[in-house]
Amino acid sequence: MSANLATMAYIAATILFILSLGGLSNPETSRRGNSYGILGMAIAVLATVFGPRVTAAGIPWIVGALAVGGAVGLYAARKVRMTQMPELVALMHSLVGLAACLVGFASYVDTSIVFEGAEKAIHEVEIYIGILIGAVTFSGSVIAFGKLSGKIGGKPMLLPARHWLNLAGLLAVIWFGVAFLQSHDIASGMLPLLAMTVIALLFGVHMVMAIGGADMPSWCPCSTATPAGRRRRPASCSRTTCSSSPARSWAPPARSSPTSCAAQ
Picture 1 (cartoon, rainbow, N blue to C red):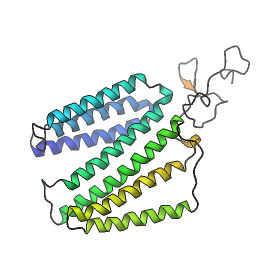
Picture 2 (tube, rainbow, N blue to C red):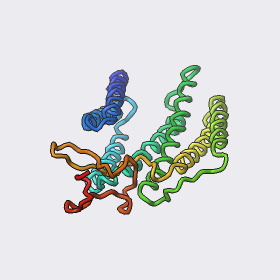
Picture 3 (cartoon, rainbow, N blue to C red):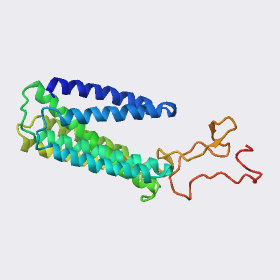
Picture 4 (cartoon, rainbow, N blue to C red):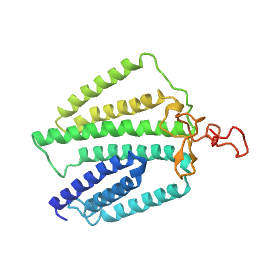
């Protein structure tokens, strides 16, 4: 596959990913959005495997990684209950953030392509921002998984002067970013890049730890079936969030109960 064809495939995959996000934002179009995401990822993987940057020696490694990842995903899809889906999504998001960090570092130390001038600056800005977002996503999603699964306490951790800490972290990230862009070689730029990564990891932990367990993005299964076949939430179940813990899950009362949600 030529470089131009691979670029066109990446553009098509990007469009499908955007359509996927739009579809997943609505329950009625979530299946279509999921299909867009699957198709986009398949196109991106094929464009990478058969693109000009992958040699024959690298294909077995990619196929092996796909087999391992696919087996793990299939096992999780079959074994995880629907009430555990939010924590599974959080765990998967942490892997996305970790992958972004690893790809960013690998792209920075790759010397097969040499950029000069404006191209070098744009390339390094992309690396810096990608690793920053990936590190925040990784650490924050790990903490979110712990809170949703009950492995970490749900009480929010509010540090004194936390907003000033966030501001100090932001200023430090900007300062290290300037130092990274002004570096003349990989060795001199690695130190500010690693320092920013550590700050981003700490920020992700601090940001999610400040969120209470009841405010984590998780729906409790508070709906009943109406005679028309539609789903509605009973009046006694407020629009709140909950973890997948059995102690906090909502369960409908027995049909014979006078206080049945159906009667409400």
